[in-house]
Length: 244
Image (tube, rainbow, N blue to C red):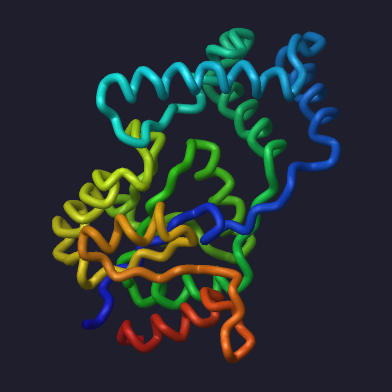
């Protein structure tokens, strides 16, 4: 069966993840002083610890309500842990959180991802996203795609699932049920859709349970010297399954 849609995970699939900047602690101090005009009340590590307490509380409350794989909304957590953010307007507050997120880890598009995305996008194949992520992730994605001369508009908003908007995350089967319903509204079945991810338990197994085709990106070497999930191999696969 020919593919009519391809849905991608973001972290470790579209994104290659790197370590935090070496000067993250110093950058945090500068960020605080620039945005809040005060000496930092919390170190970067202390802020993370305060946020973790709130996240654990929210996860426990969600579990009590019967929510499987609960997700938090990071801006709300950060603003509770750092009430000083109330001094900032919405735009300035979002910028603060984005700059903070860049101190947690570095990201860039996986090698070969831009080239692989460009062809189905050019041929108007339905592309989507399914990711455990936060609002800052989408800004990072915009930046990474722009380097590859792409825009987030290549992904159809109707077939994108972001955990921060849902209150639960993968591998909750509801994430894939929601995606299946949205695809159906576009006239596409799960059998005609490929889900691409890096984690069998989070990405592939729950997708397969809903009838999706799947593709695992992995660093394991293959017989031809490419990684088994290398983007070049994925591009070959798509070329045989999609009429280009």
